Amino acid sequence: MRFSGFRVLKEALTGHHGWKPLWRNPEPQPAYDVVIVGGGGGGLSTAYHLAKVFQGKRIAVLEKGWLGSGNIGRNTTIIRSNYLLPGNEPFYEFSMKLWENMEQEFNFNAMVSQRGILNLIHTDGQRDAYRRRGNAMLLAGADAELLDREGVRAMYPWLNFDNARFPIKGGLLQRRAGTARHDGVVWGYARGADLLGVDIIQNCEVTGFRIENGKVLGVETTRGYIGAKKVGVAVAGSSSRVMQMAGMRLPIESHVLQAFVSEGLKPVVDGVITFGAGHFYVSQSDKGGLVFGGDIDGYNSYAQRGNLPVIEEVAEGGLALMPAIGRARLLRVWGGIMDMSMDGSPIIDRTPVDGLYFNGGWCYGGFKATPASGYCFAHLLATDRPHETATAYRLDRFERGYVIDEKGMGAQPNLH
Amino acid sequence: MLIPHPLLGPRDAQEFTYLGDASLLNRPDGMAEGALDAFNRHVYLRDNPAGVHRELWFHEQGDRSWLVVTRNTLTHEILGAELARDVALAQKGGAK
Image (cartoon, rainbow over all chains, first blue to last red):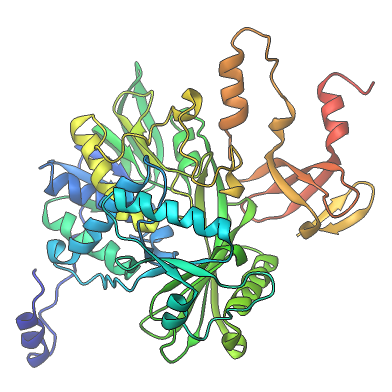
């Protein structure tokens, strides 16, 4: 089923009886060429690209709950490629380019909106750091502009420019960044993969791996054993729990990150603003709610909910930046579980077990990576070689001393 | 979250900073055989359990003691707290 303006018109005139479910609900086959564990953004994007770009056959995605019930449904929908390090920036810019063409490619409205992201600058030192970052972005083919104070004022005149502690001195702007409809991304990839013959099997939890002589043969699931030549795990948030079943310990801690949405307001924030110094970032959804967040709670958690002190801290950051929102009421708060890696960067690599591949460690930056994460993981699964933009995301980089530490925090996951 | 400090009684978790898994107390011997591998496991690899977790918290805005807190990562329920010093000494084979 393809979507088009003509189709929408036809259905509108005939009582909307012609719409069908977007994907099948097949029974699992006894064996597949590739089994992907995890039906979130990463897993579905992997399956889609594996089937479409690399012509993979007999592919299954196993999801323990319903599609998109994990972090792809619990984020703040920001897409951007404003990284600094050479191991990261080409990958995120590749992802940004995939975002730009995604809707045409999979014929689904993911509401990709390139409304721009502005990182605020408060000191001379920060301006130098952001100038360097902007140059790194330009070198990788991304776009970046350094704004002075008046440039920021022209965009957002109602910000608090003269905060005593963090006066606004300028900003780094990436105009091609923006937001996307997170559920639309899930549904688009799921439908695209299903149309290409991928079996998407929901309510099917992996309970173990069958490994013999160092080679994976298949997965045990709540719906029986499923054989596989290759198994790709993309379950960020639960990576340690799943990979532990294959006897592996990972350079990852699971942490809870909270996000917030206010009641619907008239349009006021037309882009994304980050106030790093105040641990606050904000955008406005098309429904009018301010969508915002801050830092992770900071302790290991699998609870998918956080505690009140962080809510207070984020609200303080928001009020310091935008005093005008003082009367706005908070509508919802939710938490997602992040794979916080030891250097703040992700992992897309083979594992010591033959035929078992791992994609995880996305920290709180996984949503923007969804297209490239899947593309590069599919590349690895299909060719056994990393994609050229993902060569640095090795599992053994910590041991070898090749960490990709954007913030320079060391092996302390709650500080990344 | 309230942390039951063994000396001070229940204290708000906000007074503490979090370090991580209590296994960080067991620093490997840098002179031993296989020290490189031992340090890789010590510095970078974690059990990261979903359930009961023993972890290090520093009472930064209190008496500046290090605690080993036992906490459930699925519910955030805190099951107990000990002085990290006592735990470390017990691991080295009794208080000296």
